[in-house]
Amino acid sequence: MSNGHSLSPWRSRYRGDIGLALLFFGLVAAPIAWAAQLIVIFAIASHACFPAGKPGLYPGSDAVWLTLLVVNLIAIAVALVAAGASYRNWRVADANESRAQDEIRFRVAARSRFLAGWGALAGLGFFAAAILNTIALFLVPSCFE
Image (cartoon, rainbow, N blue to C red; front, side):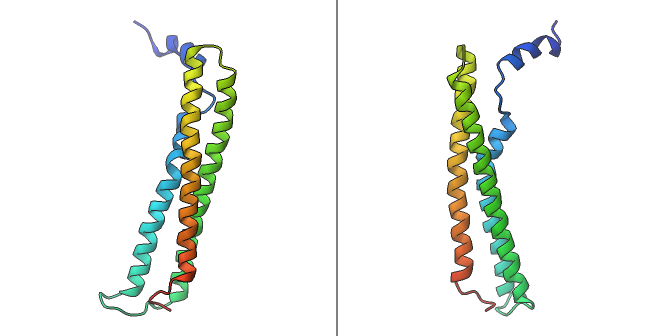
């Protein structure tokens, strides 16, 4: 019967320099931030347009617009952080892949590089989407203007 300690040298030997949590953060943080951005700004803006179930002005519409702007800026920041983390992960995994000495280490580094590359692309794509949503906040007239 083996305990968890007998496997730890094998696990540490073939584990990459990048943790899976960091890889998946870079892969999913930007899309989740963008989806949350859309849900939150839709909820706030629609309540401002229909506060009692009828069209009307929301008292303190400047606060509503400022809240929408803050939500957009948070989504932009999360997408940038996710893209930056993924790019850093991609560089580390690329270096590990080039100096891998056996098949398993090569596959671990290649897996990490693949996930980090897609995370960087997703981060940049959803960063662009969040920027476009923010631009729309300035250009599209709303019901509380």
